[in-house]
Length: 362
Ligand code: ADP
Image 1 (cartoon, rainbow, N blue to C red):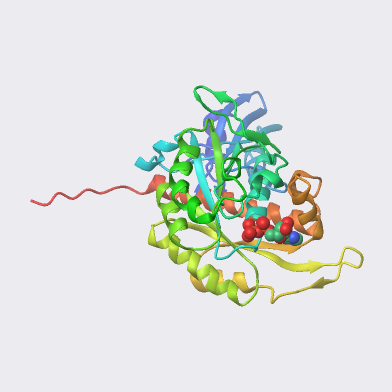
Image 2 (image 1 turned 45 degrees about the vertical axis):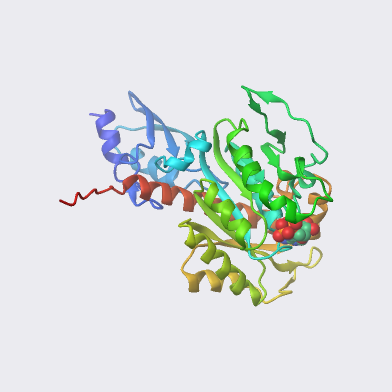
């Protein structure tokens, strides 16, 4: 007889390949209904669904349809982003499920561009996203998001309301730093200001908070990384020979403070001629991938050079806020964002599974 038990038994054989467990054990099947020969349920993924992510849904459909009495299967796809079990330092931003620091060994590699475009891509996939611009040396997010010059803030629930732009909630050091203020004065302000930007801002419930860190791996960065609760970091670099060196420095810094490396992104990886489609490796493409393999950290993807990326940043509308999903840069960003959410999903799953053992010495 066709009943919920039989359907769940069939679905129990469908594996979620990233997490290595079946969809029933992972509690991904919700609102299951069996009426006569029709089965309907919601399949809740643990990370946003990207274009083309239909494999698991197809596998579920096939498994249920293979039951002899089933004539119709209706699956509603949805997602609920997970977070790691709460740690003490997360108190500062309790409603933020995951916080991602975007870092780079040096300036000018496209760190802020990557940070904002990743944030926008995640928001476009339906996630609730915030972007905190902590780059004191050159807070460029307000310009890139078309909100430069913002100086007064509205309040929400007794806290500062972040500025909404491009589908994300934004807060920036640029809103409080004057352009001619020397960096030496900025340093001491940073720690305090950053904690305020986390704790005193009404971020609301967020799936991902992306932090655009200052470039480099010095004291300021180290202090920042230590004072904020991080799910992990993304290291941005370009493909030149120094990429390996930069990436290594960045990795070492995060390892020093026990922060997970979610992965490396290679930006300005190659150039594709918009007219003939010919691909040119301006620098030695692939350096970051090799570095990631050597350092045993995930490689999230490579983003090509496209003058449109710069033009859209300069005009206050990030590239991924436009209709670009089918361009080489657009596809690359979708892949990097997808891989990033996958890393976070796997990491959160692992930490929710790990048991803490306490041994008492007598
Ligand atoms: P960083 O934050 O590392 O200092 P930015 O994000 O400010 O670097 O980028 C430096 C410059 O490079 C900006 O003008 C930006 O628009 C441009 N840029 C970044 N990525 C690309 C890309 N993939 N293609 C073309 N220009 C890019």
